[in-house]
Length: 232
Image (cartoon, rainbow, N blue to C red; front, side, top):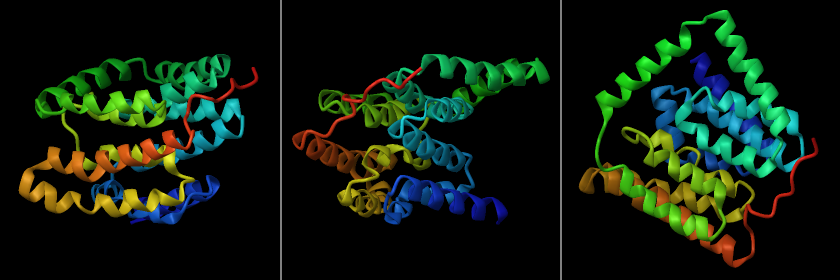
């Protein structure tokens, strides 16, 4: 109960920091994450803070958040994308060395044990239908929506995709008043998944609405390619 309460409180604060509407809390991926008490909730909070730091030109905070995001490798591509857009290489190197290097000094064995556990996890859960989702990255790249591209790419690299793994999909639309459409459409996941399977549910309820909103951003000239490098 404490974990869920703190996670909910952190999400509300992080959304408020980005001046994002609270209806994004109704996104189905977040419901599953809460239900299963997933660590992805913490990562999502850090991602939201990282987006704020990126937009507010706070390179050290962004670097710290990116280093924390890497603690869940299945969410790493969003961190890498923000780092590439910000180009704050010095801060990124310092924070990664401090966090990851410091943890190895404290426990030199954890990295090898973690890698072995990750391989076992991938082998136990591997399914063959995830990689075709990569086709949805193509229009997002064409529309220069790099954050959404990274969020979709993360799904394609997973041994299997749980719905909570899609929690990062709305990240590029936090300040769009139409983002409520993503939350509303996500509720279609349950009936579609029941009658057509989980892959169809993810595509129809989560990815297709994302493509529609991303296209509207592109038509309006709103992309993630015009960011200026952060000061070193």
